[in-house]
Length: 245
Ligand code: ZN
Image 1 (cartoon, rainbow, N blue to C red):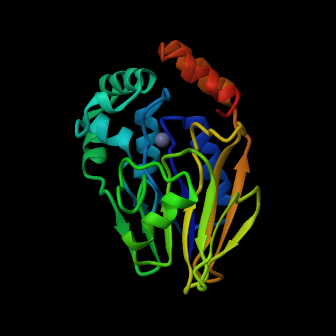
Image 2: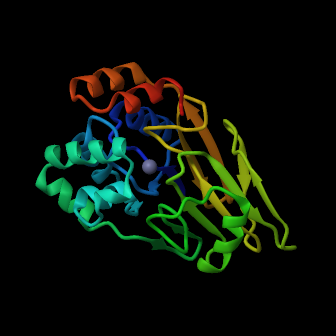
């Protein structure tokens, strides 16, 4: 089976469409998403609708999803994020809010686990360093875990011998999964990349070859920025799409 992997769409329809087109070309049979469908961007309803209609979808809740669902207080967020959440709550249709409300914190199969933040704190922890990776190793049983939340593509690995390493997946770079090793894979953010690259990102996980391939894809972020201006979303959130920061 081939899964399309994506995370942190954040209501960016242009970026999501670019990613879905890329994954369609790779002929994926299913999808894994590490959450944060909404927040920051101008198209929450359209993004949720697209994602709800994907076949064989495994998806978890992110911190922004929970805030829009009404499960999380705005005091957890910085001012820009909070303003975008308030705007999203006003826009969102009831059936889409209900979709966010029923998302799980964690999905587990024999091959992989999916969470937004980290295995030990699925909604909120930022898994940014190798030390935090090591602290999380006992919190998931499968060889592989998919995360999001940091908006930075990253691969953390503990080999069968117990050594740990961190690497950047790199465009079209392949990561091999070893059943006796443990790995956490962050495919980065579809709708708001923060690694200095403006392109959107996704990955393909092939369960037959046990390989993950990471992709960067150009999209028209100028159009997203125009829509954000019309919606009067915070200027800081609009401008950061030009820098991928
Ligand atoms: Zn996010």
